Length: 132
Image 1 (cartoon, helix red, strand yellow):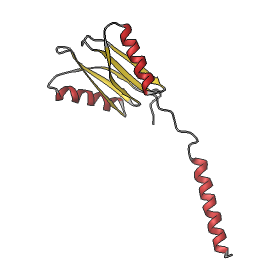
Image 2 (tube, helix red, strand yellow; image 1 turned 120 degrees about the vertical axis):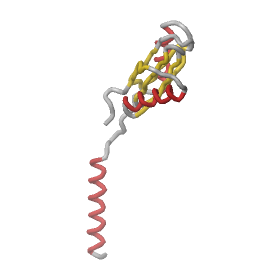
Image 3 (cartoon, one colour; image 1 turned 45 degrees about the vertical axis):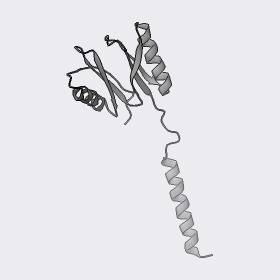
Image 4 (cartoon, helix red, strand yellow; image 1 turned 90 degrees about the vertical axis):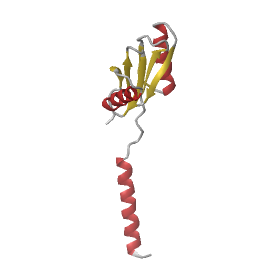
């Protein structure tokens, strides 16, 4: 055997062990948010925050909304931030999501503007604690 081969093999083994030592041992679990609104346009917004799955978040938000009365629908669900903009005159909800609260709010307002309406920001839901 050549001595250089042993040193290269040893160096690669050390680099591999070092990288493994600094790698996260488990991936951080996603926390889901969902926002439900009433189908009739009445101002009812229900949320679920930090649910373990998308389905759990949606079920929780729909359940809370239904307890307020009326038929409800999911406006937005995401593992990031969700936002709702509302046009009172037309009774229209616009939902959006983003990595940050500001991004979600901006997208919800952009959707409202694209419909030719003016909306107020009404609600946001973000994971807690916020991912870095």
